[in-house]
Image 1: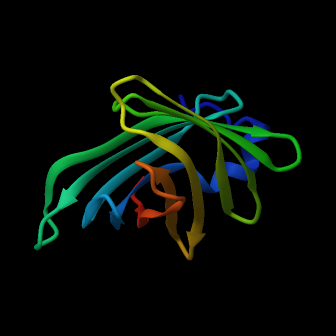
Image 2 (image 1 turned 30 degrees about the horizontal axis):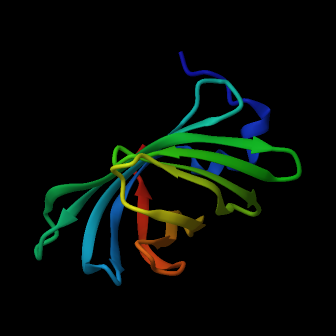
Length: 161
């Protein structure tokens, strides 16, 4: 039985579903790359979205290769079209984002970044998510490894469910 959408989730409803596609990445400390991605936004009737993302390196022919990043978390709508997002990464980084929702678009900035002693240094992040026609586009700027906030990865995904 599918739970009813909590009314607080209405501004984020456009994100619901499973999305797949491809993107590009790069950063001064790594080589540029292409990746495949799966994102899922679900709910259980409570006032939050359940989020997960998995990425894989793409080879020259567009085939999935080695696994790359994984992240999971929760998107919590707040009054006045604001949203709080908590993300956990298996690399030892946890991020809390604060942002706004408007017209099928979400803009997020880190409020807190915490890491374990063995994790790479990540200082800040800025994320944009939005519909491009029927597709979900997103971009992530990152400040890490002594570098200032700058473009790291972006992708365009199609809803598959």
